[in-house]
Image 1 (cartoon, rainbow, N blue to C red):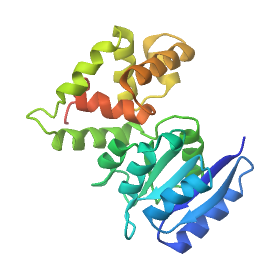
Image 2 (spheres, rainbow, N blue to C red):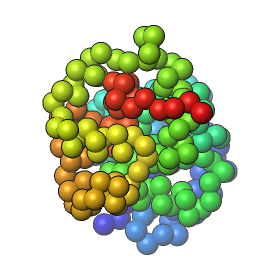
Image 3 (cartoon, one colour):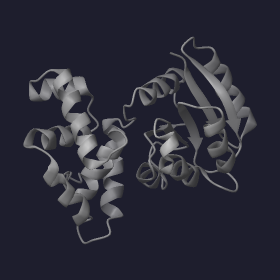
Image 4 (cartoon, rainbow, N blue to C red):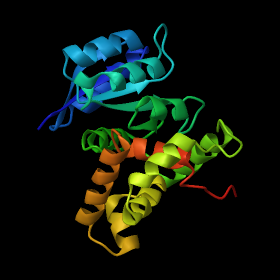
Length: 226
């Protein structure tokens, strides 16, 4: 199956570079280009995109607002948004993940990293490396609404999870892949995938990135700040 990619960035030169790169791959194609968030939302629907590479800072409707609109549309529930940012973790990344983005990638990444990001997002995985996740955790703690950053509503929803599902959720929040989690917990990758899918269904999460958000906001994950 060919992965249909939409490029959303206000820099035409950058979009052209991304188009050449993406179209050079046999398993993906660029189906549209948008120069602002409003156009990105419209083209996501019209072009039936699978993955949107979304710049955060664009004129008019920015990437954050566009991501929120795409994620909130039931007709686009299979679309995955990958945030493109100048820095791996910047001031908007946490908001973007809360808005429904599947992850983020630095604009300075290598071509192979970008192509892999598209494939990972299309497969329903989260683009959250352990390094990026550590920075993300720090921002969640810094931006918490309460004294400890814990959301009581999120925490209560965790009651629906089994002990093993909670254990797997902690590992997902650490940025680990199914294979890595399987090795850590001494189970099969298929078993891990089953637990992840059940946790997503019980918590109403679109993908793994949303599981990470819930883990942080509920207080389930309480990292050391060292």
